[in-house]
Image 1 (tube, rainbow, N blue to C red):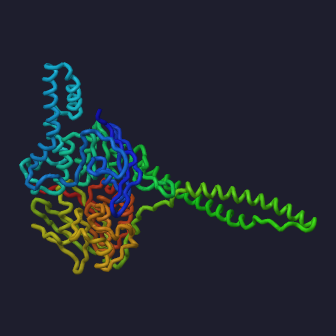
Image 2: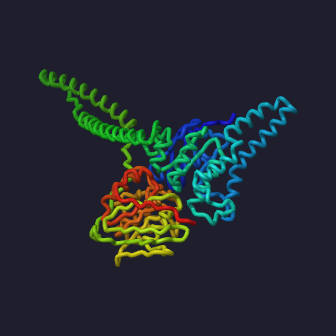
Length: 534
């Protein structure tokens, strides 16, 4: 009988340069939507790949449904494949279920003993909504903002965001029992995210998600699994702490757990220090005198021996307690990376306009848009997919010439942009090699863990690469800092710290984001873009 749940039991995984997991266990029953959270590089994507069967763990047992689907960041098709090709391939398993059901129905007439095969095929057809497939194709493409993409378009001719949404559409349409999602909302606007939330709320199978979208997790998660190390034995930190309830509930409970962990560690260290002192000092006090030569000396020897026995018993008790505590003590709390903020230097006065975009447009990508940025402004740029948020930032930093309108910048203005999609010239380089070549020190920023400085860029998680790019950018703060979806791929804690630190940035900041959590907290001016007519 195939499983309808996901079970990972005692999963251990390591790569040549690091240990990822030592003992992770989790269960996701049908209808549950469990989110994986933790620091960048902690192994969320790795655990999803293990759950999908793409990676074989070093140890542990796995139970998964026969029909398992995972959202891949890149579509596994050639650039010449069309949208129709992708959709047809995605729904092929569902159409095969209908064919199997029809064959089983014919078989019942010929052999009544084949009723079991018919019942199994019928259950699979009902689960996958096989009879409503054509309507579901239209609904899914529309819900994910792909209605205006012609079915005959080749993948090489559509944008990266459209390809990502097409990958999500294909996964939903294939209707697997187990759904594995890695950053599903990275290229979704509000409407598409709302559609995905609705789909997941109605999903009958288990769902396991890795996401940095805080508002999305608050909407959808029925449970949280935190892969960051938690309070556990000194030589075996615990991973995979389970939290029930919403993401907001998790944040509150996690902070309480970390406070308790710090207090327990502090109390245990104080007790270890006391016991070690008692054993050391007490052992010196245990003494025996020579055989007494007089009655007075005999009396003193009697009381001395009695005291020694008392001290000796106390030392033995202390030593026993010490050995017990040393074997059970919790390890020192691992403090997550914390963004230390920005370096300060002289910047233009707050009242001066340093950068102006006047009715700038890019054919098919950006409708005529104007924005004026003063020395200490904080702007948020919003808009649906295709509205031109990334395009506007490229015009603002001067890397893209507009087809209409113009860009005006103060002479000598230093503009820096954190791109949404990173392109490294050489993935074999390490962060340390890049920093040495640029004569930079980013240690004080708190964005890159020391252990990652000597690892290949190609071996770093997208979140770690993103933090490195941000660190390189702000190590010499530009006059105008342009951030394109800055919270994508950042850990939840670092995303919050980055948002808080923006208030202290010494220059102007322009953020383009669809992050609802960030937008809810934004207090500065907002520029809402509308998609240009294509």
